[in-house]
Amino acid sequence: MQRLLVSLVLLLSLALPSLAEDTPERLAERWYAALETANRSEFADLLTDDATIIIEDQEIEQTKSEFLASLDEWESAVKGTTVRHKLGGMENGKLTMFVCYEFPGNTTYSREIFSFRNGKISASAQGAIGETCEGF
Image (cartoon, rainbow, N blue to C red; front, side, top):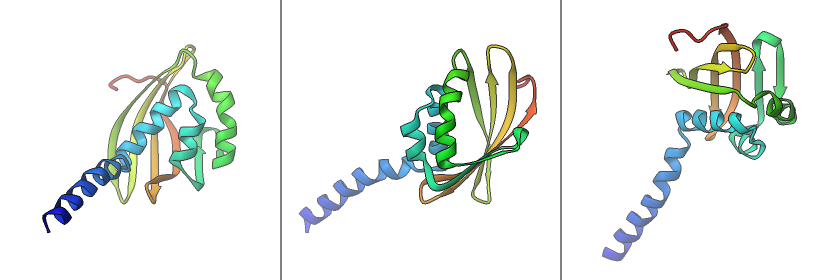
């Protein structure tokens, strides 16, 4: 009986850290870390196969594969860019983040809303809310 209890405790200790990594907040943290380097493999792992990425200001809606293909362009744009983000809140299973993109030539303040399914990001919608990050 004691062996069984020890085995269960060991299994739970191994499983709990991986469960914590799948929280919406942790997935968003991984998203922004991947943005800094245009990490294609990380995005491929983060997104559901049927994920949609929406960039409202440019009226762009991308599938997962279209988004991954667009990372070549993003990789060039992100050089010299600082991306700061903070949690806006979680409501009805959607996570809102506020993000300050400081590009070498301009700044954009945006609101990004993430949806989740099965421990992955199923949708991301981004829209600008300002051209400065005052008060960020």
